[in-house]
Image 1 (spheres, rainbow, N blue to C red):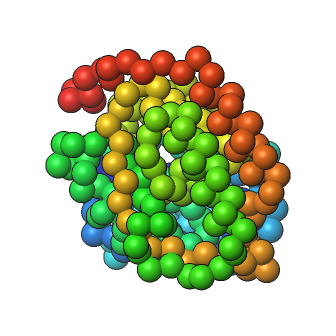
Image 2: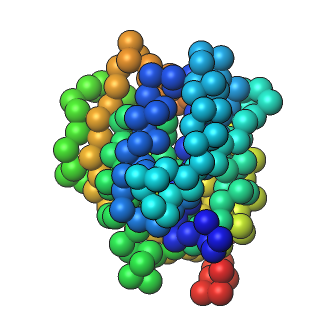
Length: 250
């Protein structure tokens, strides 16, 4: 792909050998010109070998305009660290985060891109709580999510319904101006606080959600919830709101 694509899809991966080929296939199937950046975060279950095979195939002839690149971390550093690696390598006008499991449907990319394409948003969150179809699962996860999202909204003065969603789309110029440092799941709260602090235009759209159980490989735990609480406090202190820079040339 000689010129920059419209979209970069960054997929952080850790021990997802059962789902990685399928999620790459689903992302490739979305009819948008794009590149796929898979960042393997030190997988030890055979995921790395699968990705090496996929990377050797290059561009999928069945999905014109889709370029696959695979980046390997030297060890497990966390979701936030893997995303930073992917963001640095992204060439697309818009960058979307895609988890490697099958909880989120890449066909929702169209909803995420629409406010940015329309010129009314710089950042778009895909909310699991705005009416899209979703698998019914853990009540206490829902309570914890709403609690942390409410605290985040109080700290940032945003009225998001789902801060901890995977699906976040950014104009690439936004990411280039954010100094991100969280290595783990705290990325979600850090990026939200820093986007709010810079005054970027944030939209939220409904998405579908097919959550999985711990037996099916779900990784987030109560420890990540406590880290999220700490990140709300850490990144909201000294928060400033300033007019964002002009991204029209990025």
